[in-house]
Length: 261
Length: 249
View (cartoon, rainbow over the protein chains, first blue to last red):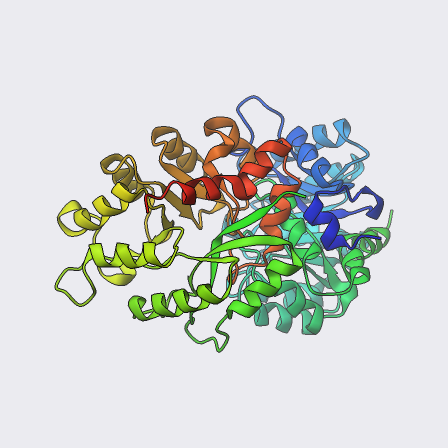
């Protein structure tokens, strides 16, 4: 039987592994004008056979929360077997945030997405109603967290306030990996997600050697990044194939199974 | 299986605050793991490489022992004479079977302007020697200027990030002597497909980005891409072999 590395080298489909991508977007700037970004995302998933992507929409501008989530809702209806949705949040008005999260969860969304690049720390009060709901429902909360940049140090604070929410820390290992390792050491319900354009050498191995395996998940950050490129980091990592399958499928499925109705 | 020839890699260089100096053996180990047939190699990491002529000798010696490694030495204008003349550098490059030359103007203290680098660039163009330029060191404006002044000089950009796709495709549409090596950090949603659709797969070169990057990432970006098998083969190795074969030795 071929190893996962061999399959990747040959471009063989990986559908049998039930791969879950914990980090995807609908966004402008990467699909030709007039084409549906969700369709493009599915095309990227189909290249290797990624089964499921958890997606947030940033396609309408990050400050237009409802418009972004409307687009995401359309995509979920169009691809119900392939896409799961994060509710994207713009935290200006806490009551609007609460209403938006309740409405979107009722529509079938799966988790929350917050982006520190919008200029608000994750501890900003406008996010609090959403995080309280995530805590009650044990939702995955995807946070943009580059090592050495604002956002990551908010995670232990959130973790103490919301001990039932599952925090997915995007871009773990991209840079200053020790920063992610410190935070992961303090927060047991933090999951390290691997996307980064740099495909930093030995990042996956470093996390594998220092973090409990069940807390490493895979995400592609496609769009804008390249899903098959992001997948290659895991396929080529010098760790056992069983661990790769756990990162690509078992761990995210377990995380999703914890969500309370 | 698609043959791969890595256009974006190297070994033997140091990085600030990091003890690891990647070796040729480590690179060869990854090439074996991924069945990569050959590699065009520079001094990497290059950020502490303050003596390119010495590094070139190390590169030549190592490549002479390994048939799968093709040297890509650093070249620079002679200026005040602290390095051999441009012609001597080119002759040495050719004599060692090099497949390209690396340009690092900022790091090595020179300008791509004609008054500084005209002789060097003219000789490289005359010989059709491909030049490799890291995007962070030579931006789109500088590459465009170079491509316009030296239209027969094959210019291979590498290290282009995902935010630059619009500029990249515009540049490649404007200048048919500009190529892209697709090693990390080039990770763009269907980016290889998009560049190929706009300017042709003939303008893309496989690369890994090792030692900065995990080499499998760019490999699967190509193997799983929507390109035809023929185009994958061009990108995987055919285009680089064609460029190297075009050097007037």
